[in-house]
Amino acid sequence: MSQIKIHQIYYKNEQKKNLEASFHPYYNDSNVGKKWFEYGVFKKEFEKRSIPLNGFIGYMSWKFYTKTDVHGKKFIEFIEKNPGFDVYFINPFLMESLMFQSQWENGEFHHRGITEITNNVFKSIGYDSHILEKPQKSDIQLYSNYWVGNESFWLKYMSYTLPVYRYVENLTDTELLKLILTNADKKIQATYIPFIMERLFTLLLMSDSSIRYMPYRYSNSE
Image (tube, rainbow, N blue to C red; front, side, top):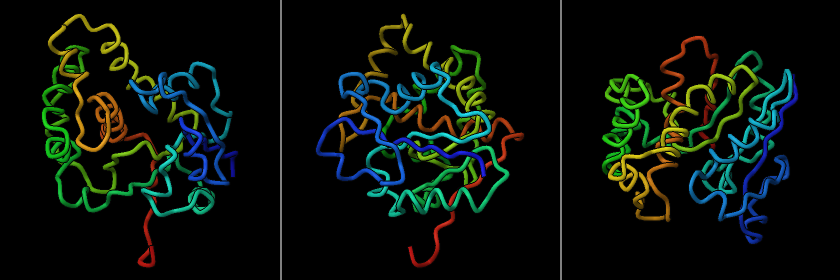
């Protein structure tokens, strides 16, 4: 099996106790990460050419085990036992995927207005916004950045997501920018940005049938 390197992002010392021994600690200053969250790390490391050749790399949040109930070692073993895919991921919110036809229907329940905002962004950068209206298979819906990809996947992922990043960073439409930067969640202090960006993973899988993907399957004992 190719090299697998999974980093685990934290931004406070007290979060270290939640880090997985099989993952590599990655400190992301809260002042740096509070706008783009994990995607800021993705972009930074991609630009540093941190993807190992013929290997897999991923960046998980410090809440990985708390959300998934799966230890890092077990997730790595799952990847090793299923070679031949470009990206591996785990969705800890399986009930959400069964309750809603898509991430965007789910998004309207938890982050009202996310679909309209994303629709405006997509139209502005020339993306087909109709994809936001399509039902999604439950096995490709993902609500956290819990995925590990090879070089091929990373190149496709960054190519797909960077236009969104650049548009938001250079946005001159003050009304749309104000909406995007509005707090979008009742539980945490976060704008619409992370909730939009984490949903682009699934849209990429829907848009590119050449990507070989493998979702983690929970056993009845988990």
